[in-house]
Length: 159
Picture 1: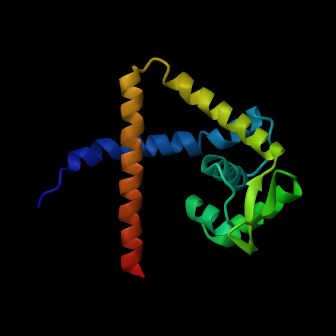
Picture 2 (picture 1 turned 135 degrees about the vertical axis):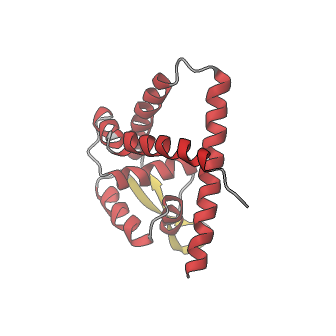
């Protein structure tokens, strides 16, 4: 079966450009500064993961959602706990286990950060018709899910 390489030829440079804007453009760093926060990117990602979950999570679940290993999350959870931005609570389903939840200060910090990022994206898409904004969201979700599934399957084949 022949593949249409023109789609990849058109898409790959745009994905590379977007990746560069988000990483080299230092979106995280600029948003943290604008929100008045001095956190490392992974620590902010832990807080954002908890915020998006809307419920306390185990360290392993945070790691899964961030697509990293548990010890990486544990290190940042410990730092966030020392700063009073998260706390450990007993898992009601297993009294031996602990869940991680944001403190009110952690929730406020996360909302400030997300507000800054949302403001930037809202500004960038302000002239887009509503239909185009919805379609972008739908297609980005589909692309991310499909690529994640495909790469996960490749990882499983390697193991």
